[in-house]
Image: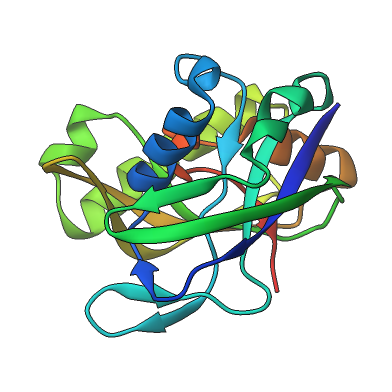
Amino acid sequence: MIVDLIFGIRCLGPIPADHGYLLYSAVSRAVPEIHRQDGYGIHPIRGRQLGGRTLQLTDRSRLAVRTSADHIAQFLPLAGKTLMLLDRRLQVGVPQVRPLVPAAALRSRLVTIKLKEAAEASGDTAAEIFVTSLRQQLDALGVSEEAQVHPGKRRTLRVKSKEVVGYEVVLECLTAEESISVQEHGLGGRRHMGCGIFVLCK
């Protein structure tokens, strides 16, 4: 069973809006045993966008880890820890466990794919290659052709000195079973850094 482990967080100042790699690195330092493990994802932190590619936390901002219920205990040591995102101190609170909920429409802030053809293409061509790859992954998960794939904004993820390109994605017309499958497995790569994790559209 896959669940979301939700931690309350506090930070006195804004954090980088592009924080996927920074957050993964900070979590790995706090819980070293998960560094080379697979099977989990760290959600992007939600907040209010500010200028200068920064994000102001709100009362609804959370640190969320999507993981197997069997592995919850590995992440519990995050409670009470202070995570450093560059020069910002992120204080982590006590977690809650939330089951995944099926919905006909899901959204991921950023999905990335490792295709040379997409990296070398541009504009509409890159988006078409991207959607074709996503459709193949959806087929592998048993998602029917009736499910609709809508790529949105082109976004980037900074990993050290490299920028990885991807797109916001909305999926619609999913059955309950398909919705849970997509949430459990995700699409694309770099789930540890917040990519390809799907949540309910709001």
